[in-house]
Length: 311
Image (tube, rainbow, N blue to C red; front, side):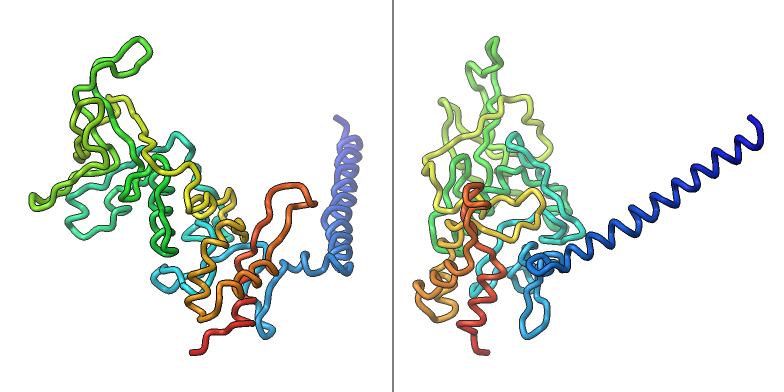
């Protein structure tokens, strides 16, 4: 290639770089910023911040926790749905749990590490999605004073799942069980305590608790529905996190579940709390998409404004 052609090609590329830099790096961002200053758009462009006495306390677009320093729910506030973003509603760690409907068997903790004082997660415990849902349902039920039972959950708040061991037919189903283990209910490590599995007998075989280190994947994994109602008292959004982990809303059903507790903690009537909830309720998107929902931060700020807790 001649030197003159080489220079001409690179000069053209350099001019294209300058033009695109001006358009995409300067003109376009400036245009978007100017559009964002239009009345009606400015608030959204600035993060939809909510303030108290001029101090920003959060965004109506990003959820947050309403707990004390130990992670316990503050009874005077409506609680957000669970979050898998970091330690909860961390905008820098937005994510989902990536657990799906087939996640029903827990990874057990090492009893020796638990005995040494380690926490369950540090000892290797990893809850399945089913157990997470069951434990959250039980926790919400205790907080709100309702029945937390749900299909495929034990009374202790873990996934009701059995490993049924025995000869199988051509389709892979166990024909005659020889052993049945409740895989998410580990045996106690001390002789003074004895586990009683959620189900005593399954197809004529006594159900055992799970022993650490044993492989129960050789059995047929069978979730047990149980006698829980088809429509649990604790709604779905109270026990599952959103895809982003930052959802600022809860369902109207979950808000209704919390009304009595919030009213008692604030010393006001349930009707007064419901009136505030209605004021903070958003309808369906464009009038037909999704369901009505309640912005948790907005309803809590409005409660603090109308019915502050002294002291």
